[in-house]
Image 1 (spheres, one colour):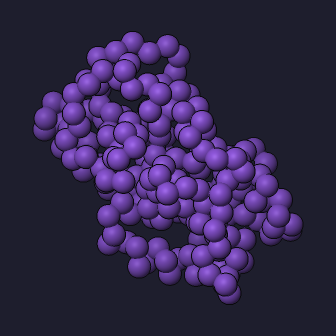
Image 2: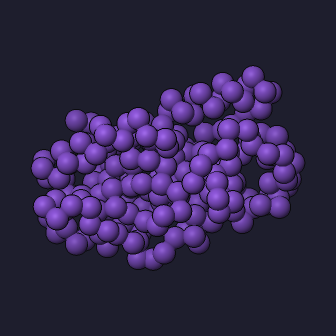
Length: 194
């Protein structure tokens, strides 16, 4: 999926089923915020988490289109827009979460589907419970590498170092997010400060 640099004009009411939230790194969000200000438009952060910013987007199936204040003003939506976006993301997510082992020598797994929405799925905290349970005494930790790519592993030094190495190689790639480590707990994610 690609991110459209200039959002088209449309009524958010017409695309409400496709509104979702995904995470971008803070630098990308700040750059987009500045571009929007120059054009007289504003994008809104729905949530900040571990060095990432959750942004409301329209998932067109081919690209993620950032929603700005003018689009939101163009239609009337019932209820909280963030709740709607998370509910739509849940509807677009296969349960149980799909996982794919990334390396035979490390317990590192890619989470989700190839739809570009992986980073937003971090908000579906409860769907990670079966993965956390499989690890037994180890704690499940996750890291968002790109907008569509989330990896998880146990909180073991070797596995976490392997993921950190992936992050260092991905830093120059389009869609890089590079959020900080999050540890799964029963009620919420906890940011890990290393």
